[in-house]
Amino acid sequence: MKPSNADIFIEKYKELEQAVRAEYHLSDGDSISYYLGHKTKYKKYQEDIAYCQRVRNFFAHNGKVPIGVNPEFAVQPSDSMLEFISRLIDKIKDRDRCIDVAVRLNKVFFCGMNHSVRSAVKIMRENDFTHVPVLEGGRVAGVFDEYSLIRCLTDSDGHSIGSELRFNKIRQQIDITDKIGKGYVFVPSAMYAEELREKIDLAYSEGRRIKMAFVTQNGSKDELLLGIITPWDLISAG
Picture 1 (tube, rainbow, N blue to C red):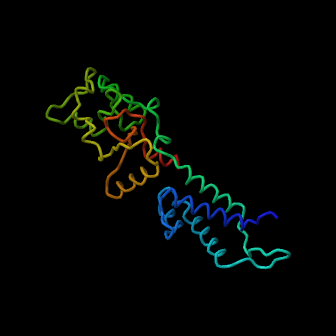
Picture 2 (tube, helix red, strand yellow):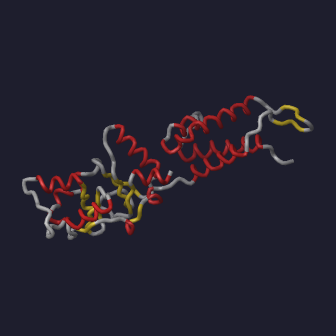
Picture 3 (cartoon, rainbow, N blue to C red):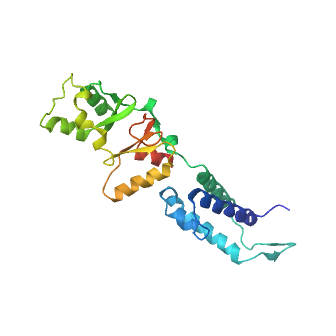
């Protein structure tokens, strides 16, 4: 006998519970509906998840009733509800890592220490770039942004942005050490993308704006840069 949509729903909801508890280390007493509904990644599904839980509770407290030859549940979930749970399970079991959503280095505009500052400013203006990584030996040594430009012009040893000015002459103004946590962060490649998104949301709630995350193997600034992630990349990745 072919299982009804209600029977399939019950099994899929069990699979959903198991996936959430395994991936997010929840105890048996924690509500997966409440947990998922308050995570940034799943907030847009909050009402659908809560509705699925109400249907599951209905089945748990109301058994099958005699309908025709065989007993059946009085309510049958739609095919779209079953598809929703299946997609949700897939999202939970196959979560993106930071390296999955990062723009790889070969597609990133960056500068070296011997790069012309004026040339970089020109490219930034033409492409609406607001910040550019400056690498040394494949590692992030600094970031050139609007604040760096202002410092170049106003510091006591201020520089004019002439054609000969190179980034190695303004190390102090672009130094990444001074910028970590103040608009820029380093994250390990294996970190889940949703964890980075929550980190960015937390910073925003505290009045800080993270403009860019640098992805390295273990999240250290002393490691080779693998790629970058902006808040827009996270939104695009869903």
